[in-house]
Image (cartoon, rainbow, N blue to C red; front, side, top):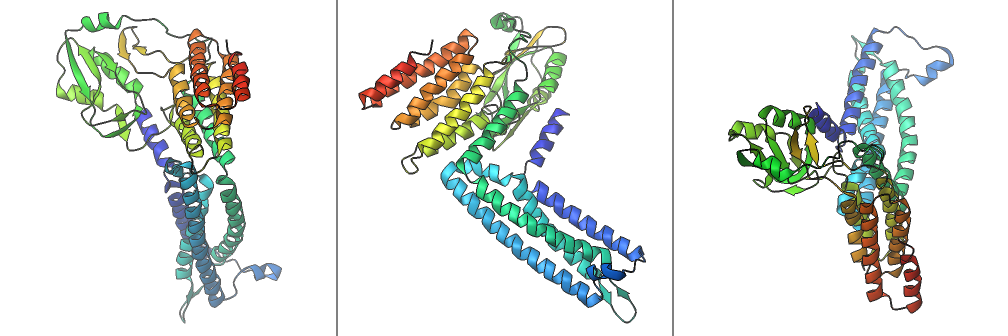
Amino acid sequence: MKKLLFWWSELKSTFWFIPVFIIISGITLAIGLVYWDSNSEFEPSGAIKYFFPGSPDSAKDILTIISGAMIGVAGTVFSITLVALTLASNQFGPRLVKNFMYDRINQTVLGTYVSLFIYCLIVLNTVKDTGEMQFIPLFSVAFALLMAIANIVLLIVFIHHVAISIQADHIIGNISINLSRHLAQLFPQDMGDRGDQQIHDIEKVKESHSSSQKLTCDFDGYLQYIDSEALMKDVSELDVFLDLYHRPGSYLVKDLELGEVYAHRNLKNDELYRLRQHFLGGKTRTPQQDAEHAIHQMVEIAARALSPGINDPYTAISCIDNLCSSLAYLTSIRFPSPYRVDASGTLRIKADVLTFAGMMDAAFNAIRQYARDSPPVIIRLMEAMITLSKFAKTEEQKGAIKKHAEMTWNLAKQQFEEKRDLEDLEKRYKKIP
């Protein structure tokens, strides 16, 4: 079931899902309204009759004008979107183009204009004016008029949205929101919930099994998802212990070792295949189980901002501020244990899990390395360490923060040419316990 939910989540996040859904809805609505008109005996009278076509020719003219206008505006919308994608790709990196393609407003606008175009074509084909028959789909044409007016408003909203969406602060803010949401989903437990923190003797567990076999990868690409519940069920039924070497977000090559299976007998190929099916891969990283995915997006923006061609330290500083906020949240949660036990309490899986120190490295190492020639960014990095030190609760967290503060301080001693800048940074460094 979880695997199906993952695939459904991936399907919904594709660029074409919403536009195709809206187009199919438009086709269905056209058929439904035409059917309603064919069975309706409604005759407009009074002032309301001016809102309905009075003849088949006027109905055809209205539908023709609307359909032509919609396909023309749809081309304009596509052009604006491509310009925004080009600007975003040049300034923030090609991997962030995916964020623009998945934007719900962009998808809705594109789908709505194409859908109304197809709607008008279908309704236009039903208008009849022959000697034997005359049919005017009154409600269908009236609905097309209302949608045309709504689409004009939607175009204004779209242009405003595109102008806002390519601003650096807006992009960084959206990535930060996504990062916070994904971290809350992946690490919902607070520091007070200790859970199963028992330390297991892995070597003893391995020695208790008579044989070991390599569990290899059957795809090239990123490990996107591990169906942990189904995997635990199978390793329990097979009575094996699985030592995993990789976690979601890792890039794997076909036939690379995913891990090692320890059993009381040699497993058959179909049994190894059964275990292998719980690991899903693809050509891109996804945020469902990869907590570092959004962090790397933020780091990429900062790295490009610090490049000589762009030289925008304030964008990098904004990335550091948002990363600091996310890392502050991580100081209050309990990272998952690498040990997974079944219902009977038997150790079945040792997983490769995230740690606070690893998240700190992912967030700040690359930015620090790219900030060698940018004293304001180095100073803000030290200020971020000061902030995080106030939230640190464990020795592991304090040690990771202190390590990054020391690396930032060592970099500053090598790069700062102004003595007073260095003295100012030293004062900040000494605030970190």
